[in-house]
Amino acid sequence: MVNKQQLYHYFYDLGLDQDETKIYLALLNKGLSTVLEIAKETKINRTTLYRRLENLVGKNLIELIIDEKRTLYKAVDLDNLEQVIIEKTAKLKTLQDNFKQIKNYLIGEVGYGQPGTRVQFYRGVQGIKQMYWHALKAKNEFVGYSYLTSESIVGYRFIERWSQEFINRGLKGRDLISQVYLDNRKEFPEAKGVNWASWQTRLLPEKVFIINHQMDIYNDIIAMYNWHNGEIFGVEIYNEKIAQMHKQMFEVFWQMGKAI
Image (cartoon, rainbow, N blue to C red; front, top):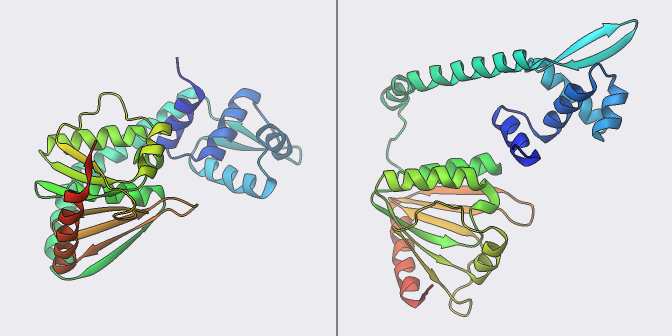
């Protein structure tokens, strides 16, 4: 049986945020409603509500109806919702089918992948997910430091998919964790069915070195992540010498870590 969290996840994958999902479900349940009625039902303030309603109309998930000087909204029926999903699936297939051609163009014409130092900045959960996926480009192994559990920011579904891809690519990993990480793991247990056989972890005591953010080191790249105290951002530094120095530092700390 589908629970509320799974339902909201489904609509998130469809491109709706939490407020938009709440509005759509309320309209599906109540039928034709005014803005005032929707606001009372969803507890969303009017300013935000107008923006979300406009978004949902644009996504073809609700309809706007003018009736005797009143503006009413209604959710599209489930057959229409299915059609929206079919259209999105078709667009995704087109993107996937054309990716190799676009990739070759970007490499050959735009100059993507040229050597040299660069710094890339990312914001939000989607940015962190993008950085995680970049780490799968590691050649054989990547190393790093973990401050909080990955599940606490990118979610279980993403980590399950990411870990499977990690295994499929034959990668290996080593990380040093903090006591804060172990405490956070109690709140976010490891996902069931995830195989970390090719991953090694050691606990680094705070008296040796304080880990206060996550860092991955692979190839000639250092990826630093931050997702606590209300800030979610990440930075990738592409530089051979900097990456080499941090790899050497990691190996020193690795010898000081305690196996768990």
